Length: 190
Image (cartoon, rainbow, N blue to C red; front, side, top):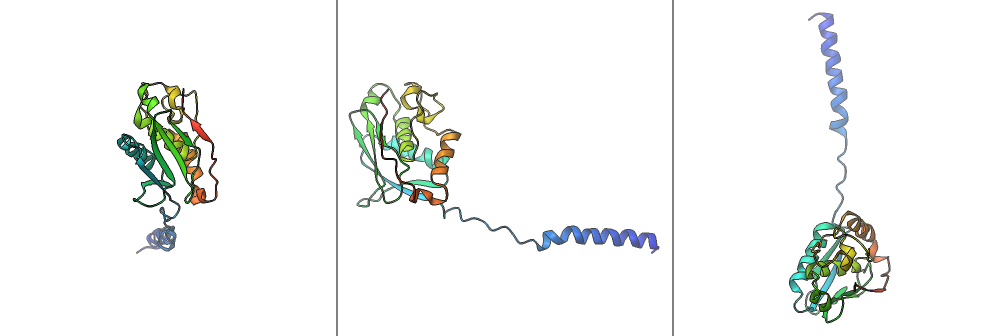
């Protein structure tokens, strides 16, 4: 092998070693424990007869759209953070963010349904209050928290990007445990 070929091969081999060395010796990045920061909130809908399907769909919407708070049905006889009841009036809820060990109330009002508002949107909207979101009235149908101002034709029960982000921030790193519930009751009449 000539000196020129030897230098080319040697340079190529050195470049290969230098290029590959950091990859081979770099420690893998730690994988964060995604469940460590998840806040679990239990809800009790045992007094919300006739709303079960809407509540299940509203809960599923929130659980599919935020990752650091989970809504789960409370086992019978256990204390829930979110108590959901059916009423004859307008929907209303205590403004959160609710934290574990505290309790808020959601009232799903039949008056809104009788005027043509969608049950699933109502349930998801009121749960949004429990998670710390105020009303954004007036607002378009794309904003879940626009509530009744979006009109009776609106059936959107999915939080938009801004609403998702606000809930994510409210429960970031499990911090809802240290953030007090606002406590105001928001009535969602038009």
